[in-house]
Length: 61
Image 1 (cartoon, rainbow, N blue to C red):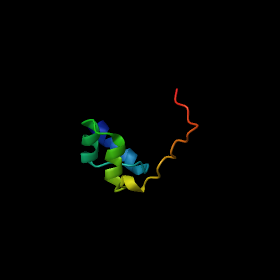
Image 2 (image 1 turned 90 degrees about the vertical axis):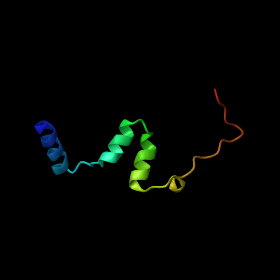
Image 3 (image 1 turned 135 degrees about the vertical axis):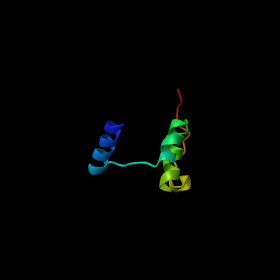
Image 4 (image 1 turned 120 degrees about the horizontal axis):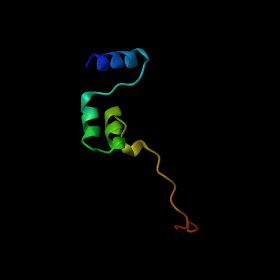
């Protein structure tokens, strides 16, 4: 446990991003990472740009 505390302290000093326990538990439970991080950061999906629509010349193999 002392190694974990030292690793955490070193990460904080280095300015690495940390996450709340609830976020870690949702990821551990298997929720999709994009959904978890989007909700954590308060970034609704509708603000993301839409991918371009396929044209009639698009060939799917």
